[in-house]
Image (cartoon, one colour):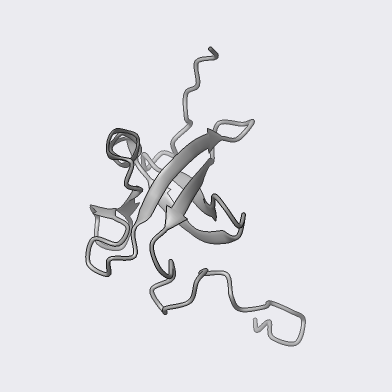
Length: 111
């Protein structure tokens, strides 16, 4: 089996794109550090690093809208992670299923 080594940024982070394992909908983007990545693999509950709070956070710890890990995939450059998961409820803090619910067009774009 091939050995993989995620490339973390200078801040020790790597972007993690979350996709519903069943529907293939893209649900959210968050950041992981090495500890969040290890916890995700060890527990099966997707865990991230909160850049704003400066701490680990298990998705759904307060809302109950957890992400159960199905599989992690590292991209070809080893600098981004795809998280395939089963969501328990809406993923976005707004209550939307996905954080990507607002269409961006020439008409909606502001400078």
